[in-house]
Image (tube, rainbow, N blue to C red; front, side, top):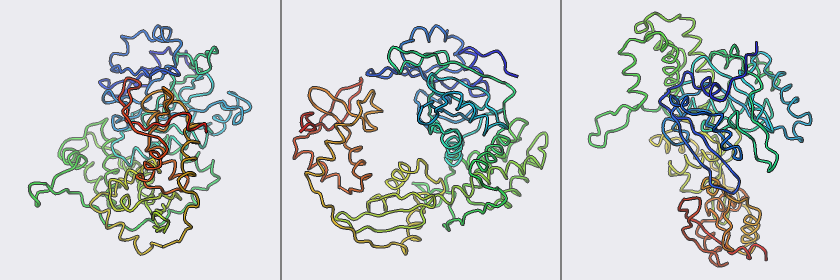
Length: 502
């Protein structure tokens, strides 16, 4: 049954009830044309703030909060260790939902009838959905984080038809504040529904979400086949010590396992321990039946009180079904060399993505990892620098050469692409949006990020070396300088605004 709707502070308490109260809540206040204001409050100190008064004080600003608590005062992915559950964000755009908010709620009821959300928030021009879990999810590895984000994307973007908001540092509008995106037409962000009984175990939520996803795609789970895994070399679990080539150094996971299997596992830690052990076995590509025996032996000897064997097996099965095959099959399956004026390589993945790489990006692991992540928003944890060249070697036999015509347009045509991009680029509101490709218009100049411009060329299939891009810019009167903006020092390129208007 729906309960009395919580206030802003009660809402925050519900969300963060079981997370580490030494971590931080991130608040961002955003106003068009002004620098973003960022504040951090310890979870344990949230009671010290009168949040209703806070929302009234900043009623003319858009107030957002970090959905997941931060370990330190930075809203970045690596600062997030646990999640209280899942969420979705659906905008009531007329082209997507002619029936408005009611159509969005009907869609949620249709697909999530057996998994109703814990809370529903009317954000002003859309709907936020929250599903809370009985215990926080331990986001202990990149594999788990990537799978968590993909599940969030399935729920929000695909099933509910909303935005892609599964990323861990995501911010949402704070209930009790006002949506002032439309000047002169403020709309309250308010909690419309709350049912504390709609709280789920991680296993139950995953199981029901998988059923919904299969139904949404018209798939029969019993008929699905596991894709063929890519063959790869076994990953070693040791790194060589810089001072002693024969001394193995334990990584973070191995240190945790060493301490876990030598101590008593008390009630309340059993499921988390089994999940993490299974995740580690997945990461090291240990077959599920062997992993099950390893974990069973550990649990039988270390749990106090004993853990139900069926529950343990179900947890291991859940971890393997979600992480094992997904992780292996995301890497590349084909490599093709393109003999363009500036040769490059097409790296095709099993997921259907094509990633264009320079020779440096192909051969240098750190550059490849960064490029892969920028396209796929994830990177398989089992591929390490140590085994990267060996993996490339397995693909080398599949390299194909393909002649392509030289780019017809030269410097002037390239410059037209540059000016068209600058003319239509949006105005940056903070350093982050500037780095994402927005521009700063000031003193008759347009200041921009050359990296984003170069990426724009790559997206247009124009493989222009950076040195040549810089030459074109200089030939047309552009330059680079350090600009002070948004209380930050930014390295920028600039071009006179009149050049884009010619």
